[in-house]
Image: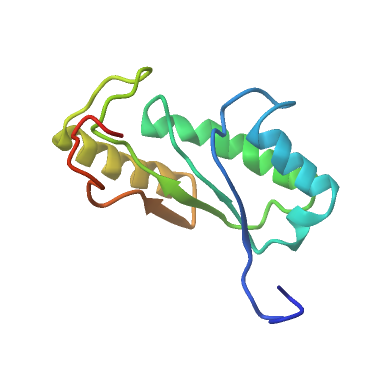
Length: 137
């Protein structure tokens, strides 16, 4: 990408499930591997998908852990972007069903949690239902 456009802005890896697993498994381990092989250092920003099974505010500890990993590879000053997050009103087997008013609250709380964690961008997925089955996530 930089060969084609030396001024291009590269964000990645857009991983999800930040709190899935532990320091040796899952998204955080993948980001650590990107640091080890030099890819993390080439990114202009680190992008993640901050979906939660808990409250929106629970992402804060994941961001702290992510920044610690980035710091191990001299990347602590890179911005972090939450490039996909949302909370459906559909049915999830492991989550309490919420209504559209609660969903609106989650949206606001998500943005505020990201602002409090100094996240440079938050992208809410999605702004409208993609079908006519209200139980579909």
